[in-house]
Image (tube, rainbow, N blue to C red):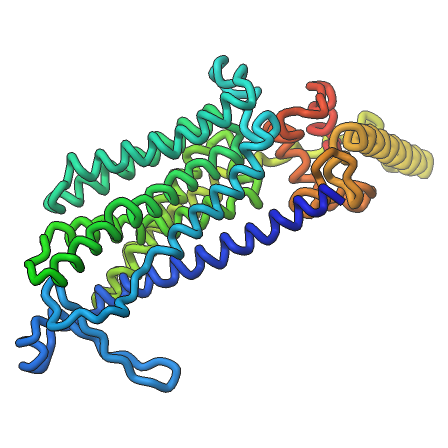
Length: 433
């Protein structure tokens, strides 16, 4: 019952996280669209009031007239709408999920015994947890320093974008070297999400509050507050699609178990950014088809990198090879050929059965504690990812996935069930005849 309650709580927390993320991302995308769809005010009255841009829209049977003021609206109502709680709720619920799933079981999810770096492979669970949290904190600090030092007044935002892109590639490479693949993808996504939420908390909202306070005091707001808020908001919109992918990647092991995992992660980040750029430009009335084309090309490259290596062709049995070389001109030779083929088929079938039986024993000893309709591993209430391996049919259904995650040593997680190299070799040879 305790495992079920933990799992149910995890479900509700994940639901909250998704709801908050949808609300935050939806509102963010809407305001980016609005900002980029504005036209100069047409009426003289609007111009006199200081309207910077406006947009007319129709939705849900009604008509809307949006107007934007830079820093000097004619009036400022008390019921001003603020956008920040969705961002904070998304990050807080996401970090709570990360804590429950990863930080509370670091030896299981965060320690990578197969790391190419000895110190990383030898880390304790608590050390891995601290390092994972440090990635979020130090990563945001470095990102913020790049923003402040390279383009403090938004005059070199192009160069800043390149620097942030390079930083994310380095983060992708580092996390894959240090942590297990699934955790590496999640930590990289969590770092980007941390930057997004921190942008709201430390830059966008404080700047807006200073602007509102100045207006209410009858003073001219500092235009830099608006510019810096816009800068961080623009960064958030380009982070959005990569973060969504990285949060979903744990369902697709072929991405993070690939030997090219850090390259795949980096390409997904760039693919998401260029696809988002296409929609940003569409809001401005520009149909730059080159951006989605680049995104699609990157996705094709990812598919090529992540694709499993082709299986060896089944080798012909010695008996069938000999039979194929015999003269088939007599009834006796035909009988020999048929008999030899039958013998070869029987031998192949017996070999396959033996291979399957061996794999079933390995899976029964190393995998079904978790991957079962009734898991027996402490704290597991249901089969992870819904993959049960109790029956021959279920094992056969997931054959390719089993081979991939076992060969990459991603599974069993942290090799908690002590799968041997001989057992991994047996699974790799399963069905290859």
